[in-house]
Length: 612
Image (cartoon, rainbow, N blue to C red; front, side):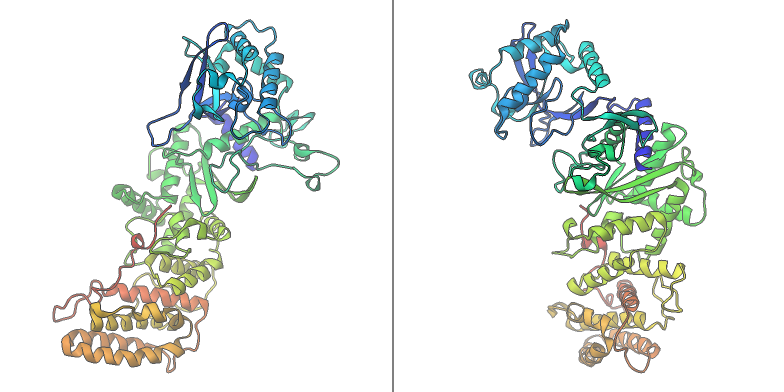
């Protein structure tokens, strides 16, 4: 199913003539240098074709005859291009550069024998007259070593591999499967149903990630006998034709490409999420992909785009049809979402979701509704990545991606796209972080609220009361009331001690108060009397208002504090704390004093973490 969808998408991109999509037998590769040859094979010039606009020169991406996975032993060169160990026999890293160069010369002597094209004849003349010792003698640039290079005739703009004669040779090689990683057997392709030669090794998928092999990884691979059956070797165990293997890997590399203009890829934890649309025409598909990307990863620094996202989610939540959001949108547009994570030399599929645009946008809107808190703890709708980061430890106000649980990130994304229950570990991890670092920011509280709200909506109830969106003074739910009470006691402490305070009760007692209230709250209430006594002497009206809040909340609690709170009630504790503490930022007492919590730390997520 996944490979079939990718193969169909490749065919559509080829028909649309997308420049970054390579035709069969070619692949985009990083090329750093070009060698200009004269007609007799002499070196006319060496050109550095890297992009030098950045601090570090970046190789140029060129479509060249496709690279393939090299065997662990032996030397296997690419056609008409390669790194210097193969082309020139010079390397700082390879211990067998002499054998690699011999293999490069042998390949081209074989496949270009009898060629009449001046460029191909010039290359053969160059290879016949070249020796690795000439590299230093001719003053070739030192930074050229181990870089990829191509050839071009002096005075011409066309690279050697793009010349018609070279393309004809390449087509002949592909037709004969010479030099390709192809099985000698033909079979029915599992992707397209054609009887064709089976790809023994599939082309590499470049993840551009530090935790993946730089040479690329595989989504289909059989590299040990324990994975094989019926005496079939490698790719014969899951027969995929060479063309189908090329198609799905080429389009995956296209979707995974780096760059600010690629909006079809985003990162969630250790997974790279790619998506694409299948619509009646390219414009409708592009409109669907843009909207989907914006909803999953809203821009954090664009106020107008943030307002657009909020408006879209509000319209969907009110039942407005998707077609009303933009002229080119069709609710029936098919969307494909694939989550991939590297695992050494392989890729693991974290999730695979296929549905219509209308259904997926509805689920994203429902996710936004489940998260919704008042007052809003964010200036822009949080992306999935920001939400996942909130479950990681906060170090100096920032979270690091390597601390995110990979399994949790994948399950969370699947829940958003499928509309199913959030993983229960999401609530447990978030509460653990609240207790561990005391960073009770609005985004973490919103995650607690989302888990509880979605479970209630799906019939899993641990309380008769709904999960409140804003401050609910009518609630009698013990966990919620205790969270409110804790916020009031903290406000009393802040108001009484002001800037003299080094650590609030939140810093010292939040974890214990939210888990074992009976052991902590009696102590906190006794200390609060001392703070209120001091506050009455300085701001009597303020003290009276805070005392009213304390009495109101305690009046709704049972006669005795609960000995412990279940994990769901600990989530309600966080919500109550957030609602009550945030209410003090805008409330003023009758005497016109400053806000009761004017010295409190803000809980806006922008201060609590950074998207990476």
